[in-house]
Image (cartoon, rainbow, N blue to C red):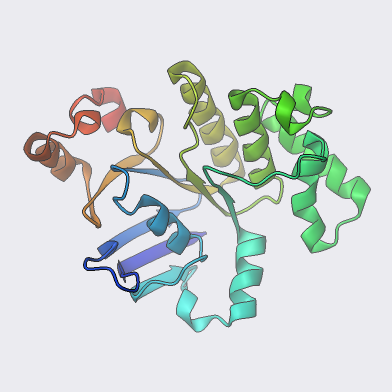
Amino acid sequence: MNLRIEQVCKRYPGAKRLALNEVSLELAGGQMIGIYGDSGAGKTTFLRIAAGRDAPTSGRVTYDGVALQEMSRSERTRHRRREIASVWAAEPWQEHLSVLEHVAMRLFVDRRDYRSAERRARQALLACEAEQCIGMRSEELSDGQRQRVELARALVSRPRLLIADGPSTRLSRIEGKAIMALLGSVARKAGTAVLLADSDADALVGVDEILCLLDGRLVNDAETRELARLYRLPSAASRPAAAADG
């Protein structure tokens, strides 16, 4: 799988400035790239465009050489369903469903029979170390358990690209690192490309590359360190050397 984002700009109607300004990125299967930036920097906008949920104002987004703009609406929908999974900060959950049903539900859009979907859901929960949650419901889960369940739900369809918005949000530092390690292990084993974002660079543990979104522009690590000095971004300035090395 290869995702290529080339010179993408995004301007919302009535906005005075660009939400994204000539952003470029390339991501391959098994690779993890983390993006951080302050609230309003454009992280979620960027993830939604990468996931094919929103269209850029200008620029190109291609999946395995096929441009998003060249796909019909039905082709884009089918592509997202089969190739891409996402974990958003506020994921909807039908509270009457058990964890197993919640994870299996993602497979029903492909008309899988219940037994097959249930089997795949159990496997995904086991891989995400959430098998103890199978019979539980939403209100019974801790934040850490819920995040493992959401990862299982995203990975149950065996996507080639996983988009995650703040996967360690609301978690303790220790639990956040555990979730990141789990995500990296499961995704790399499956050859899944991972693009994730967080407001804190320190939370992006174990990724191959860390980039910063600042005023709609995507900058690399060397530029980030200089910008951290100029703009006094504590999360970038204080990031440990080990994390910077990917």
